[in-house]
Amino acid sequence: MSDYQQKELSGSLFKNSKKEKDTHPDVRGTAKIDGVDYRVSGWNRTTKGGAPWISLAFTRADEAPQRQQPQSLMQEQASERPVASPERRAAEGAIAGMPDDIPFINLARGISGHAF
Image (cartoon, rainbow, N blue to C red):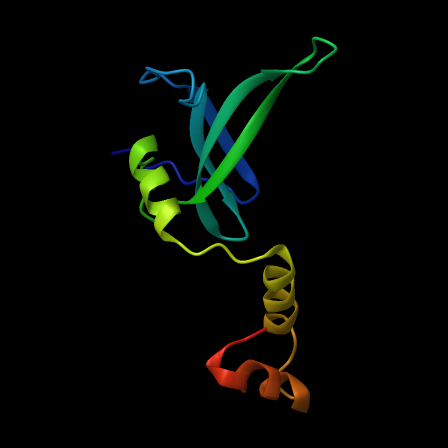
């Protein structure tokens, strides 16, 4: 084990030697932001104009990595879930973001046990 300590607002990326599929990241590494350690994954991309760039994804190091589910299982689970209308999702998001000290918000959250 290394004694290296990641410095604040810094990170390192290395070629992903375990890449087996196109969907796997091309580079992997770590970063520290606001005292939180992150795992970093990067994918090599190309703009429409042909310029190379890297798309990055950050995952907190203290969280378990999420494994991708097989496509058939994802489709099966999606078909079992009710789909909320865009209007309902927007209303729920708006209400969830409101402070509790606004009287009508608590009323809206409690009508028939459902949020709008």
